[in-house]
Amino acid sequence: MDMILQEDDGILVQPTNFSAVEDNCIYRCGFPQPSNFPFLQSLNLNSIICLSLEPYPEENLEFLKFNKVKLFQFGMDGTKEPSTMSRSAITEALKVLTDIRNHPVLIHCKRGKHRTGLVVGCLRKWQSWCLSSVMDEYKQFAGAKWRETDGRFLETFDVSCIRHCL
Amino acid sequence: MDMILQEDDGILVQPTNFSAVEDNCIYRCGFPQPSNFPFLQSLNLNSIICLSLEPYPEENLEFLKFNKVKLFQFGMDGTKEPSTMSRSAITEALKVLTDIRNHPVLIHCKRGKHRTGLVVGCLRKWQSWCLSSVMDEYKQFAGAKWRETDGRFLETFDVSCIRHCL
Image (cartoon, rainbow over all chains, first blue to last red; front, side, top):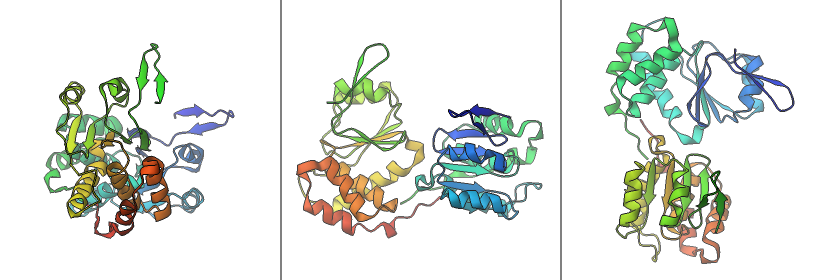
């Protein structure tokens, strides 16, 4: 568990598997717990993208309301391999993730491994990362739990259909 | 002229009318001079958007090449009131400006007052700023040179035609 000492000697506890995807504007993690709220507050978030299917917990909703953080939920089944349905959820999540009006934004699922890893991986392909770097980052967060099927999804995800338009 | 003292006692000279539009990702200024290059280097720019019509100076092009900074040029006549042509240049500039793959990005024209002020003003409308705040920011940079016609352009610029899509 990563901890950061606050100036007033309070302790800021990062959510599990927390990291910056892009400094100061895009972050990723596992499901935030109430003990993580002071840390999240320090990020001055504009939005949270949740990829879990379950209803968002009441205390998390209260935290969002109090801090005026927008919630976008694109639920995916975290136990199955990526399907056509998750492809459309991933595209919707990417729209929100890349829109600077939503920054700083935090994206999370349950453990910050598979679903979050897929969306961040697609973001990296859109950012023209080579596939081996995309997979290295995916595996860095999925650890021993990395999935062959996620790798195939990232390999075949077509970024040419992604257009950024105004 | 704003100057920042470097750690090695070198002096970083900001371009005229320099400011952050969005911290760490979008900056604005007047035309960068060679004396500003060390300062620009400290921003780790990915891209520059130039709104001037003139060919980009050779020494600036060399700076961009050496630092691997992309150049997008959308020329507009800075002496005239905004026209249909500048409306399309502004939309193209906004596309580049809001695409995180181009961040950190610097937008500039000659003096960083009118053309840059128009694009930043349209960005602010897209970000849902109220018109009076948009105008306050425009006037802050245009100073005594602010133009009634620019104000009317910003008032009527239709952000509903702006869609962010993947």
